[in-house]
Image 1 (cartoon, each protein chain N blue to C red):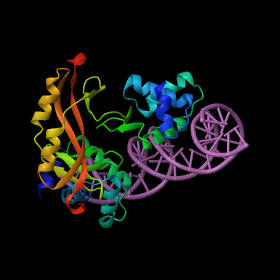
Image 2 (cartoon, each protein chain N blue to C red; image 1 turned 180 degrees about the horizontal axis):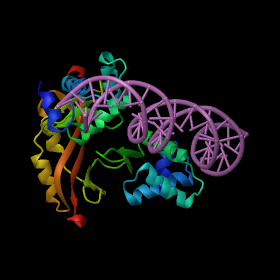
Image 3 (cartoon, each protein chain N blue to C red; image 1 turned 135 degrees about the vertical axis):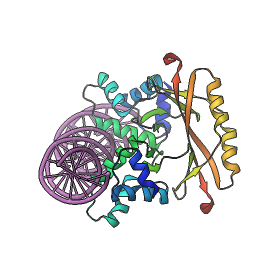
Length: 132
Length: 132
DNA sequence: CTATATGCAAATAGTTTGCACGGAT
DNA sequence: ATCCGTGCAAACTATTTGCATATAG
Protein backbone atom coordinates (compact mmCIF):
# COMPACT_ATOMS: atom_id res chain seq x y z
CA UNK A 1 0.00 0.00 0.00
CA UNK A 2 1.62 3.20 -1.19
CA UNK A 3 -0.48 5.47 1.01
CA UNK A 4 1.47 4.11 3.90
CA UNK A 5 4.61 5.66 2.50
CA UNK A 6 2.92 8.94 1.83
CA UNK A 7 2.15 9.22 5.52
CA UNK A 8 5.50 7.95 6.79
CA UNK A 9 7.38 10.35 4.56
CA UNK A 10 5.62 13.15 6.39
CA UNK A 11 6.14 11.80 9.87
CA UNK A 12 2.53 10.89 10.22
CA UNK A 13 1.67 7.61 11.83
CA UNK A 14 -0.30 5.20 9.74
CA UNK A 15 -3.72 4.72 11.22
CA UNK A 16 -6.74 3.02 9.70
CA UNK A 17 -8.63 6.32 9.86
CA UNK A 18 -6.01 8.16 7.87
CA UNK A 19 -5.70 5.40 5.36
CA UNK A 20 -9.41 5.46 4.78
CA UNK A 21 -9.46 9.21 4.33
CA UNK A 22 -6.79 8.92 1.69
CA UNK A 23 -8.46 5.93 0.09
CA UNK A 24 -11.79 7.72 -0.12
CA UNK A 25 -10.23 10.83 -1.59
CA UNK A 26 -8.41 8.69 -4.07
CA UNK A 27 -11.60 6.96 -5.16
CA UNK A 28 -14.05 9.84 -4.94
CA UNK A 29 -11.75 12.64 -5.91
CA UNK A 30 -13.26 15.52 -3.96
CA UNK A 31 -14.92 15.28 -0.59
CA UNK A 32 -16.07 17.78 1.99
CA UNK A 33 -15.53 17.48 5.72
CA UNK A 34 -19.03 16.10 6.10
CA UNK A 35 -18.62 13.69 3.22
CA UNK A 36 -15.54 12.31 4.90
CA UNK A 37 -17.23 12.13 8.26
CA UNK A 38 -20.14 10.17 6.84
CA UNK A 39 -17.86 7.94 4.82
CA UNK A 40 -15.56 7.10 7.71
CA UNK A 41 -18.47 6.62 10.05
CA UNK A 42 -19.46 3.58 8.03
CA UNK A 43 -16.32 1.75 9.01
CA UNK A 44 -15.57 3.46 12.33
CA UNK A 45 -18.91 3.93 14.02
CA UNK A 46 -17.49 5.95 16.86
CA UNK A 47 -15.21 8.19 14.86
CA UNK A 48 -15.26 11.79 15.94
CA UNK A 49 -15.57 14.86 13.78
CA UNK A 50 -12.55 16.14 15.68
CA UNK A 51 -10.50 13.30 14.25
CA UNK A 52 -11.58 14.24 10.76
CA UNK A 53 -10.65 17.85 11.33
CA UNK A 54 -7.35 17.04 12.97
CA UNK A 55 -6.38 14.77 10.14
CA UNK A 56 -7.52 17.13 7.44
CA UNK A 57 -5.54 19.89 9.08
CA UNK A 58 -2.33 18.02 9.56
CA UNK A 59 -2.45 16.38 6.17
CA UNK A 60 -3.12 19.73 4.56
CA UNK A 61 -0.20 21.20 6.44
CA UNK A 62 2.02 18.43 5.14
CA UNK A 63 0.57 18.86 1.66
CA UNK A 64 -0.65 15.31 1.51
CA UNK A 65 -4.05 16.70 0.66
CA UNK A 66 -5.32 20.13 -0.22
CA UNK A 67 -8.43 22.21 0.07
CA UNK A 68 -10.36 23.27 -3.00
CA UNK A 69 -12.46 26.35 -2.42
CA UNK A 70 -15.46 26.68 -4.65
CA UNK A 71 -17.82 29.63 -5.01
CA UNK A 72 -21.18 29.04 -3.33
CA UNK A 73 -20.22 25.62 -2.06
CA UNK A 74 -18.55 23.96 0.83
CA UNK A 75 -14.84 23.38 0.45
CA UNK A 76 -13.73 19.95 -0.64
CA UNK A 77 -10.42 18.17 -0.28
CA UNK A 78 -8.35 16.21 -2.73
CA UNK A 79 -5.08 14.33 -2.73
CA UNK A 80 -2.21 16.57 -3.72
CA UNK A 81 -1.06 15.76 -7.21
CA UNK A 82 0.21 17.51 -10.30
CA UNK A 83 -1.17 21.04 -10.66
CA UNK A 84 -4.50 20.97 -12.44
CA UNK A 85 -7.74 22.83 -12.87
CA UNK A 86 -11.29 22.05 -11.83
CA UNK A 87 -14.64 22.12 -13.50
CA UNK A 88 -17.75 22.48 -11.43
CA UNK A 89 -20.85 21.23 -13.17
CA UNK A 90 -23.64 23.69 -12.53
CA UNK A 91 -26.24 20.93 -12.91
CA UNK A 92 -24.95 18.08 -10.77
CA UNK A 93 -22.39 20.07 -8.80
CA UNK A 94 -19.77 17.41 -9.32
CA UNK A 95 -16.18 18.49 -9.50
CA UNK A 96 -13.87 17.25 -12.21
CA UNK A 97 -10.16 17.53 -12.73
CA UNK A 98 -8.81 19.04 -15.88
CA UNK A 99 -5.26 19.00 -17.16
CA UNK A 100 -4.62 22.30 -18.82
CA UNK A 101 -1.66 24.11 -20.25
CA UNK A 102 -1.55 27.33 -18.29
CA UNK A 103 1.73 28.44 -19.74
CA UNK A 104 0.23 31.17 -21.92
CA UNK A 105 -1.98 32.33 -19.12
CA UNK A 106 0.98 32.78 -16.80
CA UNK A 107 2.90 34.51 -19.53
CA UNK A 108 0.01 36.87 -20.12
CA UNK A 109 -0.29 37.67 -16.45
CA UNK A 110 3.43 38.22 -16.12
CA UNK A 111 3.65 40.36 -19.21
CA UNK A 112 1.80 43.16 -17.46
CA UNK A 113 4.91 43.67 -15.41
CA UNK A 114 3.07 44.51 -12.22
CA UNK A 115 3.49 41.10 -10.71
CA UNK A 116 5.83 38.22 -10.57
CA UNK A 117 3.39 35.36 -10.90
CA UNK A 118 4.39 31.96 -9.67
CA UNK A 119 1.28 29.84 -9.94
CA UNK A 120 -2.34 29.86 -10.89
CA UNK A 121 -5.56 28.27 -9.76
CA UNK A 122 -8.21 27.90 -12.40
CA UNK A 123 -11.78 26.92 -11.83
CA UNK A 124 -14.34 26.50 -14.57
CA UNK A 125 -18.06 26.60 -14.48
CA UNK A 126 -19.97 24.56 -16.96
CA UNK A 127 -21.92 21.44 -17.64
CA UNK A 128 -20.49 17.97 -17.63
CA UNK A 129 -21.05 15.31 -20.26
CA UNK A 130 -23.68 13.43 -18.30
CA UNK A 131 -25.71 16.57 -17.71
CA UNK A 132 -25.54 17.89 -21.26
CA UNK B 1 -24.63 59.00 -6.28
CA UNK B 2 -24.75 56.05 -8.59
CA UNK B 3 -24.67 53.46 -5.80
CA UNK B 4 -28.18 54.53 -5.00
CA UNK B 5 -29.32 53.27 -8.35
CA UNK B 6 -27.46 50.03 -7.96
CA UNK B 7 -29.48 49.33 -4.85
CA UNK B 8 -32.81 50.54 -6.18
CA UNK B 9 -32.46 48.45 -9.29
CA UNK B 10 -32.31 45.42 -7.04
CA UNK B 11 -35.20 46.38 -4.80
CA UNK B 12 -32.92 47.14 -1.94
CA UNK B 13 -33.61 50.18 0.13
CA UNK B 14 -30.88 52.73 0.27
CA UNK B 15 -29.53 52.94 3.78
CA UNK B 16 -26.41 54.71 4.99
CA UNK B 17 -25.00 51.38 6.09
CA UNK B 18 -25.39 49.86 2.65
CA UNK B 19 -23.99 52.89 0.94
CA UNK B 20 -20.94 52.78 3.14
CA UNK B 21 -20.38 49.10 2.48
CA UNK B 22 -20.45 49.77 -1.23
CA UNK B 23 -18.31 52.86 -0.90
CA UNK B 24 -15.69 51.02 1.11
CA UNK B 25 -15.61 48.14 -1.34
CA UNK B 26 -15.29 50.61 -4.15
CA UNK B 27 -12.34 52.32 -2.52
CA UNK B 28 -10.59 49.38 -0.93
CA UNK B 29 -11.41 46.77 -3.52
CA UNK B 30 -11.52 43.64 -1.38
CA UNK B 31 -12.69 43.44 2.20
CA UNK B 32 -13.53 40.63 4.57
CA UNK B 33 -16.55 40.53 6.85
CA UNK B 34 -14.40 41.75 9.71
CA UNK B 35 -12.80 44.47 7.64
CA UNK B 36 -16.24 45.76 6.82
CA UNK B 37 -17.41 45.52 10.39
CA UNK B 38 -14.45 47.52 11.62
CA UNK B 39 -14.79 50.04 8.82
CA UNK B 40 -18.50 50.63 9.35
CA UNK B 41 -18.09 50.77 13.09
CA UNK B 42 -16.16 53.99 12.64
CA UNK B 43 -19.18 55.76 11.32
CA UNK B 44 -21.94 53.72 12.97
CA UNK B 45 -20.72 52.98 16.45
CA UNK B 46 -23.60 50.70 17.25
CA UNK B 47 -23.70 48.76 14.03
CA UNK B 48 -24.21 45.06 14.46
CA UNK B 49 -22.30 42.24 12.84
CA UNK B 50 -25.71 40.86 11.96
CA UNK B 51 -26.33 43.90 9.80
CA UNK B 52 -23.06 43.32 8.00
CA UNK B 53 -23.93 39.70 7.38
CA UNK B 54 -27.48 40.42 6.31
CA UNK B 55 -26.32 43.01 3.85
CA UNK B 56 -23.50 40.94 2.50
CA UNK B 57 -25.90 38.08 2.00
CA UNK B 58 -28.62 39.99 0.26
CA UNK B 59 -26.26 42.00 -1.88
CA UNK B 60 -24.47 38.83 -2.89
CA UNK B 61 -27.79 37.26 -3.76
CA UNK B 62 -28.61 40.22 -5.94
CA UNK B 63 -25.12 40.15 -7.42
CA UNK B 64 -24.35 43.65 -6.31
CA UNK B 65 -21.25 42.26 -4.67
CA UNK B 66 -19.54 38.90 -4.76
CA UNK B 67 -17.42 36.70 -2.62
CA UNK B 68 -13.84 35.95 -3.54
CA UNK B 69 -12.56 32.74 -2.00
CA UNK B 70 -8.84 32.54 -1.53
CA UNK B 71 -6.74 29.57 -0.47
CA UNK B 72 -5.57 29.83 3.13
CA UNK B 73 -7.32 33.12 3.74
CA UNK B 74 -10.62 34.52 4.80
CA UNK B 75 -13.03 35.29 2.01
CA UNK B 76 -13.25 38.84 0.83
CA UNK B 77 -15.98 40.67 -1.03
CA UNK B 78 -15.84 42.97 -4.01
CA UNK B 79 -18.29 44.95 -6.10
CA UNK B 80 -19.51 42.94 -9.03
CA UNK B 81 -17.97 44.18 -12.23
CA UNK B 82 -16.61 42.86 -15.49
CA UNK B 83 -15.17 39.35 -15.16
CA UNK B 84 -11.56 39.52 -14.09
CA UNK B 85 -8.85 37.59 -12.33
CA UNK B 86 -7.10 38.10 -9.03
CA UNK B 87 -3.53 38.10 -7.91
CA UNK B 88 -2.72 37.40 -4.30
CA UNK B 89 0.65 38.71 -3.26
CA UNK B 90 2.33 36.10 -1.11
CA UNK B 91 4.30 38.78 0.71
CA UNK B 92 1.76 41.42 1.65
CA UNK B 93 -1.35 39.33 1.06
CA UNK B 94 -3.02 42.11 -0.87
CA UNK B 95 -5.40 41.19 -3.61
CA UNK B 96 -5.23 42.82 -7.00
CA UNK B 97 -7.52 42.73 -9.98
CA UNK B 98 -6.21 41.65 -13.32
CA UNK B 99 -7.85 41.99 -16.68
CA UNK B 100 -6.99 38.93 -18.68
CA UNK B 101 -7.99 37.46 -21.96
CA UNK B 102 -9.28 34.03 -21.02
CA UNK B 103 -10.57 33.26 -24.46
CA UNK B 104 -7.85 30.74 -25.26
CA UNK B 105 -8.18 29.17 -21.88
CA UNK B 106 -11.89 28.60 -22.33
CA UNK B 107 -11.28 27.28 -25.79
CA UNK B 108 -8.72 24.87 -24.49
CA UNK B 109 -11.02 23.64 -21.76
CA UNK B 110 -13.90 23.25 -24.17
CA UNK B 111 -11.81 21.47 -26.76
CA UNK B 112 -11.61 18.41 -24.55
CA UNK B 113 -15.24 17.82 -25.31
CA UNK B 114 -16.13 16.56 -21.88
CA UNK B 115 -17.60 19.81 -20.71
CA UNK B 116 -19.49 22.78 -21.92
CA UNK B 117 -17.62 25.52 -20.12
CA UNK B 118 -19.32 28.83 -19.57
CA UNK B 119 -16.99 30.79 -17.35
CA UNK B 120 -13.74 30.69 -15.48
CA UNK B 121 -12.30 31.97 -12.27
CA UNK B 122 -8.58 32.50 -12.23
CA UNK B 123 -6.47 33.25 -9.23
CA UNK B 124 -2.76 33.87 -9.35
CA UNK B 125 -0.16 33.63 -6.69
CA UNK B 126 2.83 35.86 -6.93
CA UNK B 127 4.54 38.97 -5.71
CA UNK B 128 3.33 42.48 -6.31
CA UNK B 129 5.43 45.39 -7.51
CA UNK B 130 5.83 46.94 -4.08
CA UNK B 131 7.03 43.69 -2.58
CA UNK B 132 9.42 42.78 -5.36
C1' DC C 1 -48.63 54.29 6.00
C1' DT C 2 -46.30 50.07 4.67
C1' DA C 3 -42.53 47.48 3.93
C1' DT C 4 -38.10 46.63 4.92
C1' DA C 5 -33.61 47.49 7.54
C1' DT C 6 -31.27 47.81 11.87
C1' DG C 7 -29.48 46.31 16.31
C1' DC C 8 -29.70 43.32 19.96
C1' DA C 9 -29.81 38.80 22.01
C1' DA C 10 -30.24 34.17 21.43
C1' DA C 11 -29.71 30.22 18.56
C1' DT C 12 -27.24 27.43 15.41
C1' DA C 13 -23.23 25.86 12.72
C1' DG C 14 -18.51 25.07 12.08
C1' DT C 15 -14.04 24.28 13.98
C1' DT C 16 -10.56 23.79 17.62
C1' DT C 17 -8.70 22.38 22.05
C1' DG C 18 -7.58 19.60 26.33
C1' DC C 19 -7.45 15.46 28.26
C1' DA C 20 -7.59 10.40 29.21
C1' DC C 21 -6.98 6.32 26.87
C1' DG C 22 -5.37 3.24 23.16
C1' DG C 23 -2.53 1.97 19.34
C1' DA C 24 1.66 2.52 16.30
C1' DT C 25 6.58 2.28 16.03
C1' DA D 1 8.41 2.29 26.48
C1' DT D 2 7.44 6.39 24.06
C1' DC D 3 5.07 9.18 21.19
C1' DC D 4 1.33 10.22 18.69
C1' DG D 5 -3.64 9.54 17.35
C1' DT D 6 -8.38 8.93 18.73
C1' DG D 7 -12.75 10.05 20.79
C1' DC D 8 -15.23 12.67 23.88
C1' DA D 9 -16.68 16.95 25.93
C1' DA D 10 -16.11 21.56 26.27
C1' DA D 11 -14.61 25.87 24.30
C1' DC D 12 -14.48 29.01 20.78
C1' DT D 13 -15.50 31.28 16.37
C1' DA D 14 -18.47 32.23 12.64
C1' DT D 15 -22.92 32.88 10.96
C1' DT D 16 -28.00 33.04 11.21
C1' DT D 17 -32.46 33.97 13.20
C1' DG D 18 -36.38 36.28 15.76
C1' DC D 19 -38.07 40.17 17.44
C1' DA D 20 -38.87 45.08 18.67
C1' DT D 21 -37.82 49.46 17.00
C1' DA D 22 -36.49 52.69 13.49
C1' DT D 23 -36.24 54.41 8.86
C1' DA D 24 -36.92 54.53 3.65
C1' DG D 25 -40.10 55.04 0.09
